[in-house]
Length: 231
Image (cartoon, rainbow, N blue to C red; front, side):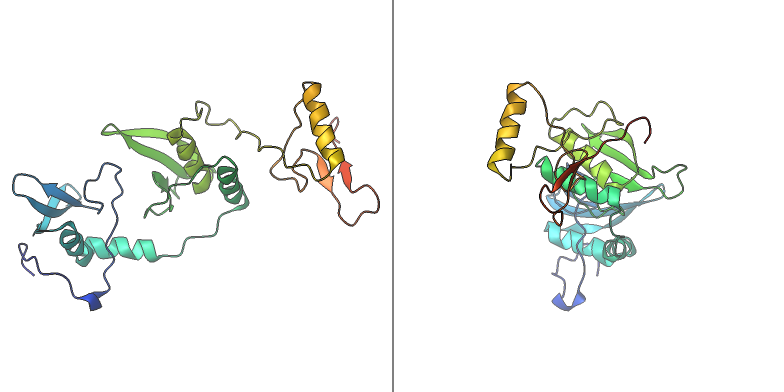
């Protein structure tokens, strides 16, 4: 197909149109821009230090199809179709924490699966996920994280206007669970009257720190256990 050809693609091609990565994309497709002077959509890529022109088209979809047909687009599609490893325990906890905070982890077609998050397997140490976003046309580095989900959670908090000044700060504790009985509700009210805060925990089956729920136990089913002096 010549660069100026604007025929629509055959349905049987099964091409994958690659979505845009940049937030400020006006077309919604990767490597597709709109040329206002010529009133056409342009498909072009950078290969090393060179710019490769793939053609001008009447619609963004036709330009995206041209990119999808190219070796660059097919390489992107292959990456998107690769199965990603299941989240680790820390990654799953970050996903749960985002749900508790009412946040959405923004996904993308990157190797990590999340917007602005890049996986760097050769990076030293345990933190191999780099979070870097574009703000006002400039690249903004936000930190390294142990999992892609933790990086995505940090990004979601930043977008929501939450405090993210300390990269090492633990996430805020989850809200207390709903009381399961009248006695539990009264204990929560008493804590409030005394100006106390019940310490919650996302990893505890009870919802509270150091409180273990033992459903098979006879009688009282909640056990309180704390460490003291390293024991």
